[in-house]
Length: 173
Image 1 (cartoon, one colour):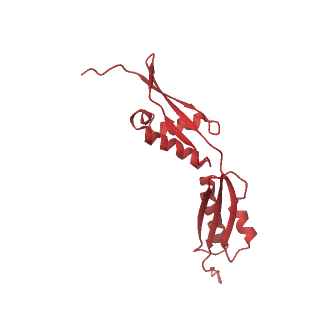
Image 2 (cartoon, one colour):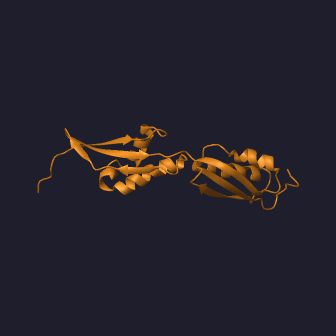
Image 3 (cartoon, rainbow, N blue to C red):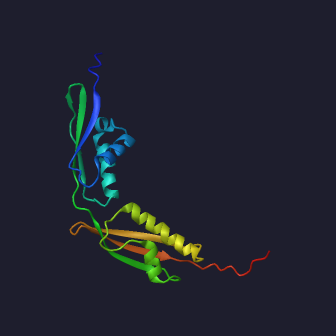
């Protein structure tokens, strides 16, 4: 069995303007750089996930065939980022027990800002925490995001179930 030449793996990104190459290389390292050679669809999905998390929901990634030159095997990763998606409507439902302005302040998601799934998850945590601080210990927040590919925007519906309010009546020392 002839093992063939030993080459150094190298990944190059092309077309990435919104996300730095260094961040994409960190993702490549996290999933295993050789994934680009061994399982290109899996590698593409990992890079596309970074783009989706940053609100570039239409991004497409294409791993090219390796090119071997001077002892280096280079895989080019072609990125078509598309337009960043922004937040459209932010509808708040439920939330009884706290003024709407207070809930929106805790949410910190407003129309026109860039849509980011991590920011939305953080917003849910902040709203739940605010309700718990106000004594609504069973508060639950659910979010529904509706993607409009023609705009490109994401409309967000936030449903707050405050639950019963707990009130401390007596403190005995």
